[in-house]
Length: 225
Image (cartoon, rainbow, N blue to C red; front, side, top):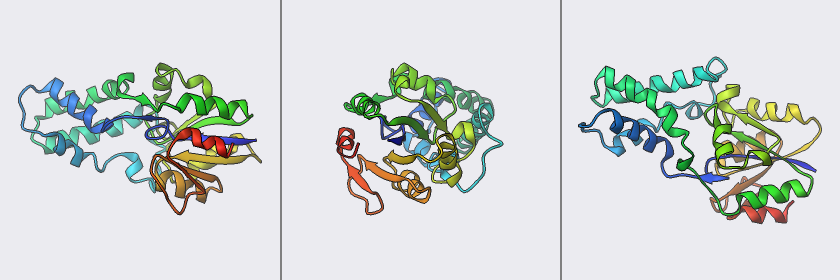
Protein backbone atom coordinates (compact mmCIF):
# COMPACT_ATOMS: atom_id res chain seq x y z
CA UNK A 1 0.00 0.00 0.00
CA UNK A 2 1.11 3.59 -0.61
CA UNK A 3 0.95 7.02 0.93
CA UNK A 4 -0.98 9.29 -1.40
CA UNK A 5 0.18 12.91 -1.03
CA UNK A 6 -2.43 15.26 -2.40
CA UNK A 7 -1.91 18.87 -3.34
CA UNK A 8 -4.99 20.99 -2.58
CA UNK A 9 -5.51 24.08 -4.78
CA UNK A 10 -5.92 23.05 -8.41
CA UNK A 11 -5.86 19.36 -7.51
CA UNK A 12 -8.71 18.57 -5.13
CA UNK A 13 -10.40 21.96 -5.29
CA UNK A 14 -10.41 24.89 -7.66
CA UNK A 15 -11.02 28.61 -7.46
CA UNK A 16 -10.76 31.61 -9.75
CA UNK A 17 -7.74 33.86 -9.12
CA UNK A 18 -8.13 33.07 -5.43
CA UNK A 19 -5.45 35.29 -3.92
CA UNK A 20 -5.82 38.24 -6.26
CA UNK A 21 -9.59 38.18 -5.92
CA UNK A 22 -9.34 38.11 -2.14
CA UNK A 23 -6.77 40.92 -2.00
CA UNK A 24 -8.85 43.04 -4.39
CA UNK A 25 -11.98 42.38 -2.34
CA UNK A 26 -10.17 43.46 0.84
CA UNK A 27 -9.19 46.71 -0.85
CA UNK A 28 -12.70 47.38 -2.16
CA UNK A 29 -14.18 46.77 1.27
CA UNK A 30 -11.74 49.28 2.75
CA UNK A 31 -11.53 52.03 0.15
CA UNK A 32 -14.67 52.96 -1.76
CA UNK A 33 -12.95 55.16 -4.33
CA UNK A 34 -9.56 54.15 -5.75
CA UNK A 35 -7.87 53.70 -9.11
CA UNK A 36 -6.37 50.25 -8.50
CA UNK A 37 -7.42 47.60 -11.01
CA UNK A 38 -7.65 43.86 -10.58
CA UNK A 39 -4.75 43.48 -13.00
CA UNK A 40 -2.67 45.76 -10.76
CA UNK A 41 -3.29 43.35 -7.89
CA UNK A 42 -2.46 40.35 -10.05
CA UNK A 43 0.88 41.90 -10.98
CA UNK A 44 1.68 42.48 -7.32
CA UNK A 45 0.74 38.91 -6.47
CA UNK A 46 3.02 37.45 -9.12
CA UNK A 47 5.73 37.54 -6.46
CA UNK A 48 6.09 37.94 -2.72
CA UNK A 49 4.53 34.67 -1.52
CA UNK A 50 6.67 32.08 0.23
CA UNK A 51 6.11 29.59 -2.58
CA UNK A 52 7.53 32.05 -5.08
CA UNK A 53 10.93 31.64 -3.43
CA UNK A 54 10.91 28.03 -2.18
CA UNK A 55 14.70 28.04 -2.01
CA UNK A 56 14.35 30.17 1.13
CA UNK A 57 13.90 28.73 4.60
CA UNK A 58 10.70 30.14 6.11
CA UNK A 59 10.76 28.23 9.38
CA UNK A 60 10.82 31.57 11.22
CA UNK A 61 7.51 32.44 9.54
CA UNK A 62 4.99 29.76 10.44
CA UNK A 63 1.52 29.98 11.95
CA UNK A 64 0.59 33.54 12.82
CA UNK A 65 4.00 34.77 11.65
CA UNK A 66 3.24 33.43 8.19
CA UNK A 67 0.33 35.84 8.07
CA UNK A 68 2.49 38.68 9.39
CA UNK A 69 4.91 37.99 6.53
CA UNK A 70 2.11 37.97 3.96
CA UNK A 71 0.34 41.02 5.42
CA UNK A 72 3.58 42.95 4.97
CA UNK A 73 3.54 41.97 1.29
CA UNK A 74 -0.10 43.01 0.83
CA UNK A 75 0.54 46.26 2.68
CA UNK A 76 3.54 47.07 0.51
CA UNK A 77 1.57 46.27 -2.63
CA UNK A 78 -1.29 48.58 -1.65
CA UNK A 79 1.06 51.44 -0.79
CA UNK A 80 2.93 51.00 -4.07
CA UNK A 81 -0.40 51.37 -5.86
CA UNK A 82 -1.16 54.68 -4.18
CA UNK A 83 -3.27 53.53 -1.24
CA UNK A 84 -2.71 55.48 1.98
CA UNK A 85 -0.75 53.71 4.71
CA UNK A 86 -3.71 53.51 7.16
CA UNK A 87 -6.01 52.09 4.48
CA UNK A 88 -3.29 49.74 3.25
CA UNK A 89 -2.86 48.39 6.77
CA UNK A 90 -6.60 47.87 7.23
CA UNK A 91 -7.04 46.20 3.85
CA UNK A 92 -4.05 43.91 4.26
CA UNK A 93 -5.38 42.62 7.56
CA UNK A 94 -8.73 41.74 5.95
CA UNK A 95 -7.22 39.29 3.46
CA UNK A 96 -6.83 36.59 6.10
CA UNK A 97 -10.55 36.15 6.73
CA UNK A 98 -11.57 36.63 3.11
CA UNK A 99 -9.22 33.99 1.72
CA UNK A 100 -10.51 31.36 4.14
CA UNK A 101 -14.18 31.67 3.20
CA UNK A 102 -15.29 28.22 2.00
CA UNK A 103 -17.33 29.82 -0.78
CA UNK A 104 -14.03 30.59 -2.53
CA UNK A 105 -13.50 26.90 -3.23
CA UNK A 106 -15.19 24.23 -5.32
CA UNK A 107 -14.32 20.56 -5.12
CA UNK A 108 -13.80 18.75 -8.40
CA UNK A 109 -16.70 16.43 -9.11
CA UNK A 110 -14.63 13.31 -8.48
CA UNK A 111 -12.61 14.51 -5.47
CA UNK A 112 -14.56 12.69 -2.78
CA UNK A 113 -14.92 9.50 -4.83
CA UNK A 114 -11.21 9.16 -5.52
CA UNK A 115 -10.28 9.85 -1.88
CA UNK A 116 -12.73 7.17 -0.75
CA UNK A 117 -11.48 4.65 -3.30
CA UNK A 118 -7.87 5.22 -2.27
CA UNK A 119 -8.73 4.46 1.36
CA UNK A 120 -10.88 1.47 0.40
CA UNK A 121 -7.83 0.00 -1.33
CA UNK A 122 -5.81 0.42 1.86
CA UNK A 123 -3.82 3.51 0.87
CA UNK A 124 -3.24 6.48 3.17
CA UNK A 125 -4.27 9.97 2.07
CA UNK A 126 -2.41 13.02 3.29
CA UNK A 127 -2.46 16.63 2.10
CA UNK A 128 0.91 18.09 1.11
CA UNK A 129 0.24 21.70 0.17
CA UNK A 130 1.86 25.09 -0.26
CA UNK A 131 -0.77 27.00 1.63
CA UNK A 132 -1.74 29.12 4.59
CA UNK A 133 -1.58 27.56 8.08
CA UNK A 134 -5.34 27.16 8.62
CA UNK A 135 -6.08 25.11 5.49
CA UNK A 136 -7.72 22.43 7.63
CA UNK A 137 -10.52 24.83 8.52
CA UNK A 138 -11.39 24.97 4.81
CA UNK A 139 -11.22 21.21 4.34
CA UNK A 140 -13.51 20.94 7.37
CA UNK A 141 -16.02 23.28 5.73
CA UNK A 142 -15.77 21.32 2.48
CA UNK A 143 -16.36 18.12 4.46
CA UNK A 144 -13.26 16.27 3.25
CA UNK A 145 -10.97 16.35 6.30
CA UNK A 146 -12.09 12.88 7.35
CA UNK A 147 -10.50 11.40 4.24
CA UNK A 148 -6.99 12.40 5.35
CA UNK A 149 -4.71 11.01 8.02
CA UNK A 150 -2.37 13.98 8.09
CA UNK A 151 -1.90 17.46 6.64
CA UNK A 152 1.51 18.93 5.93
CA UNK A 153 1.11 22.62 5.08
CA UNK A 154 3.96 24.93 4.12
CA UNK A 155 2.57 27.71 6.32
CA UNK A 156 2.97 25.39 9.30
CA UNK A 157 6.33 23.77 8.54
CA UNK A 158 8.25 26.64 6.90
CA UNK A 159 9.20 24.88 3.66
CA UNK A 160 7.45 25.09 0.29
CA UNK A 161 7.36 22.55 -2.50
CA UNK A 162 9.47 21.71 -4.45
CA UNK A 163 11.93 22.08 -1.58
CA UNK A 164 13.02 18.64 -0.42
CA UNK A 165 12.44 19.26 3.27
CA UNK A 166 8.65 19.41 3.02
CA UNK A 167 8.62 16.02 1.30
CA UNK A 168 11.04 14.65 3.89
CA UNK A 169 8.65 15.73 6.65
CA UNK A 170 5.90 13.68 5.03
CA UNK A 171 8.19 10.67 4.63
CA UNK A 172 9.33 10.88 8.25
CA UNK A 173 5.84 9.93 9.43
CA UNK A 174 5.71 6.81 7.26
CA UNK A 175 9.19 5.30 7.05
CA UNK A 176 9.73 2.58 4.47
CA UNK A 177 6.42 3.29 2.70
CA UNK A 178 5.98 4.05 -0.99
CA UNK A 179 4.82 7.58 -1.76
CA UNK A 180 2.76 9.01 -4.59
CA UNK A 181 2.66 12.79 -5.10
CA UNK A 182 -0.51 13.96 -6.86
CA UNK A 183 -0.78 17.57 -7.99
CA UNK A 184 -1.34 20.05 -10.78
CA UNK A 185 1.97 21.89 -10.64
CA UNK A 186 4.74 20.48 -12.88
CA UNK A 187 7.46 22.05 -10.74
CA UNK A 188 6.22 22.03 -7.15
CA UNK A 189 4.47 18.66 -7.31
CA UNK A 190 6.11 16.72 -10.11
CA UNK A 191 9.76 17.78 -10.02
CA UNK A 192 9.59 18.16 -6.26
CA UNK A 193 8.05 14.75 -5.80
CA UNK A 194 10.49 13.10 -8.22
CA UNK A 195 13.46 14.63 -6.40
CA UNK A 196 12.09 13.20 -3.16
CA UNK A 197 11.88 9.72 -4.68
CA UNK A 198 8.11 9.65 -5.05
CA UNK A 199 5.97 8.36 -7.88
CA UNK A 200 4.34 11.42 -9.43
CA UNK A 201 0.91 12.04 -10.92
CA UNK A 202 0.05 15.24 -12.77
CA UNK A 203 -3.67 16.05 -12.89
CA UNK A 204 -5.77 18.60 -14.77
CA UNK A 205 -2.79 19.89 -16.77
CA UNK A 206 -2.43 17.56 -19.74
CA UNK A 207 0.85 15.79 -20.45
CA UNK A 208 4.20 16.39 -18.78
CA UNK A 209 7.18 14.22 -19.64
CA UNK A 210 8.54 14.42 -16.10
CA UNK A 211 5.43 12.91 -14.48
CA UNK A 212 5.09 9.16 -14.10
CA UNK A 213 1.37 9.47 -14.86
CA UNK A 214 -0.82 12.24 -16.28
CA UNK A 215 -4.58 12.22 -15.84
CA UNK A 216 -7.27 14.68 -16.81
CA UNK A 217 -9.65 13.43 -14.12
CA UNK A 218 -8.98 12.37 -10.55
CA UNK A 219 -10.93 9.14 -10.89
CA UNK A 220 -8.50 8.06 -13.61
CA UNK A 221 -6.01 7.63 -10.77
CA UNK A 222 -7.99 4.52 -9.85
CA UNK A 223 -6.24 2.78 -12.73
CA UNK A 224 -2.99 2.85 -10.75
CA UNK A 225 -4.46 2.29 -7.27
